[in-house]
Length: 261
Image (cartoon, rainbow, N blue to C red; front, side, top):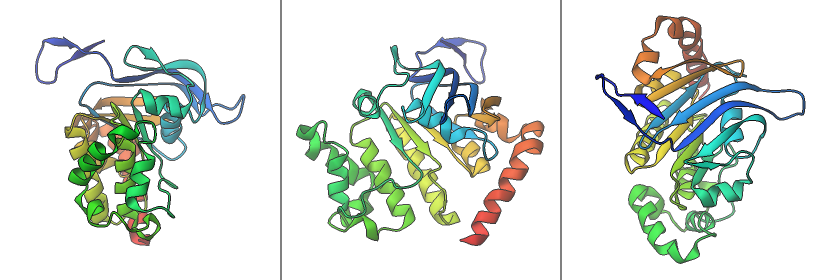
């Protein structure tokens, strides 16, 4: 695919890491949440997906990860069609996914959780554990502690680390800052950016729209199961139409959630 370089006139041909094209999908036959939704992520990119409640943001991620049936359209990973493949196949092929809730095994220790993330490649356990301890030092310090005793932010770190154990080429994050305090949200965003800088392509659904657009290379605004707006994070954050239609309402939603925490 061809993409215009920012700040120049030259074009650069880059192969997409992952692409969803004209996806129609839903949880119930005959009732679609996504109505022709498309997304593409290139190597090294961090992509943000924002939009009002019910727009289909999380459904798009789940459709890309085989958790929601794709009725038409396609999802590709590099040159491979991965539409409606089983989740275990996708993990082995290099797709990582971190759900918003129920994303750790609370009765297992931190290290046991991480080992579960690499059950398909046990010979690399020590190497990948060392990499995760380096990326998440707080987890190393508490590696024998039960995951159920962790705070929300710590659980999110553990869920990300477990998804990274298989060295995915793309990491799908479903609302990583949901339910966290403003300080913990900032820590999560910085950690996500750090993961991205290790070479992992990140596609993130996020309720904190403004912060998401600040740190993402490009963004997609979904509305009623379709792409309403796309562009660089900066362009979307400064687009009067996006601000008027989405960011104001989304910011109010985030402020309300922060007051509750």
